[in-house]
Image (tube, rainbow, N blue to C red):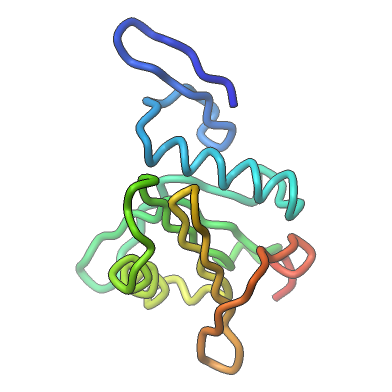
Length: 140
């Protein structure tokens, strides 16, 4: 990770937004999962988008990270929390609310210390012990 000091604020380079952003604890987790998805799952940077805004009805949401499939449909939503935030049912519920609008196949919640991955199978989510590979994500 490329971390720099800009005056009083530490910053980190976001390869998705192609700019330096404030290095908050949540941003550090987001940049970590971006690098893991890129390096271990083979997700190209151009298939990911951070800080994505979308609407469901009249309600606006912001997903920390979305991975798109080859049809440019959302396939994975990632919810990032600060390291001290527990990955409890409230965090999962937040990601599931995003899924109402996005209809993704994978949900990932992470605080950098723990990561939980859920895969939609026959309309229901099942927890899995691994991150999806891009070859799985990009298929529709």
